[in-house]
Amino acid sequence: MNDKTEESKPLSMKEDDEGSENLSPEKLSMDELVDRTVGTSTGRYVGFLFLMFLVSKSTASMMCYLPVFTGYIPYTDWECSSEQCFSLLQNHTGENNTFYTRDTMCTNKLKADVDFIWTPKRSSYAVDFGIYCGTESQNSNVNSFYFIGGFVGLIGSSTLYEMFGRKKVTLAAGLIAVSATIGMAFAGNIQTLCGLRIMQGLGMLSFVTGHYVWVMEFTPLRLRNLSNTLLSITWPSGTGILIFISYMVTNWRYNIGIIAIISILFYIQLLICPESPRFLVYKDKEEQALKILNKMAKFYNTPPLQSNVLQREVEQKGKSEGLLKQMKDFIIYPVMLRRTLFLMICWFMVSLFYYGLSFGWHKMGKNIMASQGFACISEVVACTTSFALIGATGRKKTQMLVCLGIAICFGIAMIDVPLSSTWHLRQVACLIAIIFIGAEFITVFLYTVELSPTSHRGMILSSCSGVARIGSFLGPYLSLLYNVLDRRIVLAIFAGSAVLAAVGTWFLLEDTTGVEIPETPADLQGVKRLREEDEDI
Image 1 (cartoon, rainbow, N blue to C red):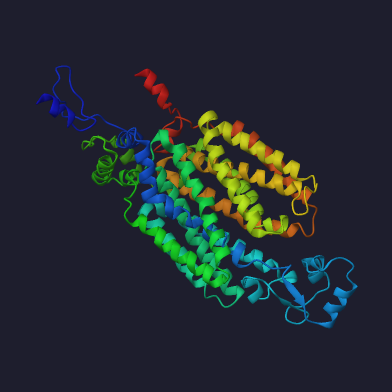
Image 2 (cartoon, one colour; image 1 turned 135 degrees about the vertical axis):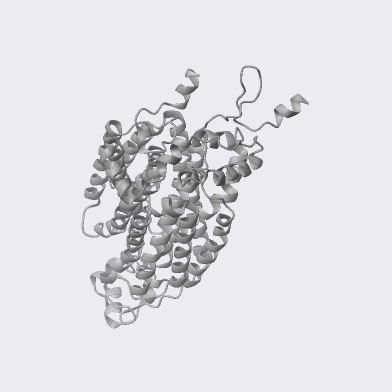
């Protein structure tokens, strides 16, 4: 009888010296509540993550890279149709396949449907809308305008996550992104396409930020690295799906339409996912938060939590927070300002690197499918590499190591040595650089979440991601510099920036490995590591 009563007793109930239950439950922080709710079941947590979040996250890379496959310019797939072009072909001393190139077309100012006709195996909006040679920058506009929308969306939504919750804002952002994607499939000109890309970026990048905060607030301390890695793997997974669809579907409009349909299906899982308990507590809704945690406890097969177990200190601090108060806190707590500014620089740098390469593979190799596919594999390796490094060395050392790895790879890429008829040393070095860049993306995302207090997390993450969108916007235009500047100049700038980021990390950031996520800015100073607390106990 007593044994049965003892087994069914809710978690967190204290007992006095005589063995009777104390009516006052043990007070726990949100991190402790989440840790106890999940328990030791890593497998069940991975199942929860897959059922509720992972599938929907893969839509981010699909929408981002749509122009890479639907708007490529087939500079090798065309035939002469005018006397001028045939004359150039007759005077060409090399083989025919060396004649049908971008240089021949653009240097001689050949005009589509006048001097030549396109003969691609798959359609492209670049061909339909007359984008080539002198108008090639319009294609970069389609890529970059996505990040203009992302910047506007992230700045505009920076406080919405704290006002309306992670779930509502994330779902609304996803709806905007899907609506814009559907519109792109029916775009009649490049101007309409650019406008819809702004809307798509506004929705999708706000979606990604809210989605990440939402997930991490369900994640116990010991599983943050695993959760971060699994979420990151969804990016190359989505890219792989896009590559497969683009290979199978030759019509660019159908391609975009299929991605929109897949996104709608993938978002269904988010409808059944509960709101973040941490957010509910922050908004003084403790009963709702505990109700969600106890539903999760049933899934994880852990004991239920008793009411009134949460430390009230966190709730009272969060009630009066608003945009103006949040901004003032950066002055009151300079440590938060220092960390945030440096993290914003890191986000800008890694986004510039990543998208400068991701939208420039067609400049590095002849086969866009193969180049993007190898880059996709590199990103998978980056996810596993970051997981291992973070687990072995911690957040701070990992960020320093991957930044130095980026610098070394870009330094090697400055050496232009042919390895075969289609591959050069610079391509291989840049593919390896993607591994380190991807690892830095994963690390800085996790680092930012762990360094930011709950009361300001949405704002800080949105601000960092917003600055990253500026780097993302500039990234696609870097491929245009390859036509006018020596690649070594661009790569040298990349390498030098990565070295400075590694040095800055050493001096400006603290390691967050094993540290509880702060709830308010006041918790940023004097935070004890969990393992140290255990030793004290």
